Image 1: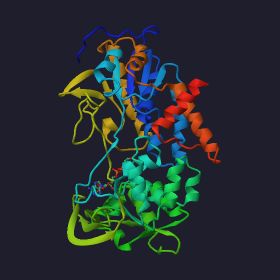
Image 2: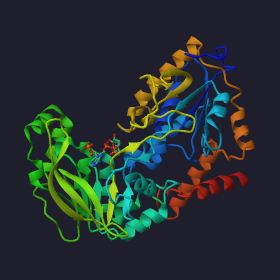
Image 3: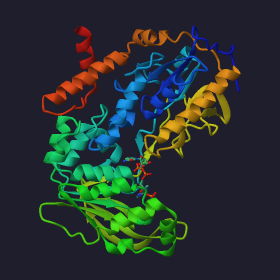
Image 4: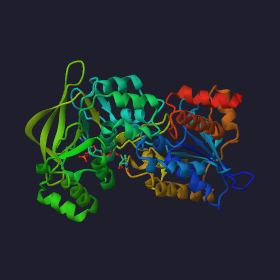
Length: 467
Ligand code: NAP
């Protein structure tokens, strides 16, 4: 590994200085793993391009999953550590070049996730009325970068909705669109999101799997939840549940698959009911093209069979599903940070298997990666904990071996940013946002209402600073 300086001292007077880029679960677990060890004194800057911490816990986990979102309380406690400084509203590569950041610290850990959507690569994909799940999820979670106009105009015409993909995100999207306004009232969704969802004319939702139910990637608890909705009835075609021998084998070997099949079988007798939204789970159907002129009116799908290698193979049998809104929920993809390499195929930063970043196939001293940008968009929030520990172990081993290069004074980071016109949001500023959201929620009897616009978030910070 390259060392272009003396080994950084790691004494309480001169702790190891680490910047963690991305304050989602992977970033906070990384910071936590660093602060919870005592071998190497550390000082951490946890940088995020948003003025708010928590990444996908705030802007990804469905707002009606209150129990899952409660993990933010645990993550919040981690932010209080005296060796940790939250530096929000700072985009590396825009407000500060990566190179300049690296001059301030001894090591950088990239934990900025996978924010982009995957494309289907079929005709009509860019028609109005076709959205990526990432866009819809960002919007209903109140992400400052969500394109309100685009999502809300698509939703305003959405009678028939088709969600492509059978992962947990597809279930989230289908479920949120089929919820009653009363079911969503207790969430922290922005008020305009609640209003737009209540006004959306949704009459039917279809969730589409290109392979069979034995190959679906959703998990059982999330699937089961569809059956407990106040205003929607799950419909499944019994023919989709007739398994070929390979799928039988898969179900016998994998408890999640067999449980999923059990849940699906429990719904085969369901029939459409008046005044309830039919929520269809339809398998063996792959999207061929989106139809419509000026906006989406339908989705052409081809019936498939699953071959011996588990791949979807077209049968040539084509059908058109009515659709005013098509949501592609076919996975997330990581993007490059200016100055950082990315493997375009996997959408991850190349690393040595334990989180040490590789540049041109060589270890790059002082650069590490954890979370989705390390391993791809998979697993639950907790998966990032072990992942972050692995990366931190590599970082600490390198620090102890004295192979990290020495950065400049880390305390200068915030003043450097301010001198460049950036407006870093620190922990007490985030607390002001937190308080403003709780206060806004209380005006409608809710625990919290998410502030959507970046300006509203920053206004809460400025108002608190004036007090
Ligand atoms: P995912 O689990 O990878 O699911 C992607 C889905 O898209 C799969 O069904 C896949 O089918 C399908 N797909 C991919 N390309 C396609 C194409 N060209 N045409 C049709 N279908 C296509 O991804 P995700 O749903 O985005 O979730 C990401 C991660 O977050 C997962 O680990 C998930 O469990 C996690 N998550 C968890 C929760 C929760 O715990 N409640 C909630 C949300 C997300 P094939 O299998 O055929 O490729």
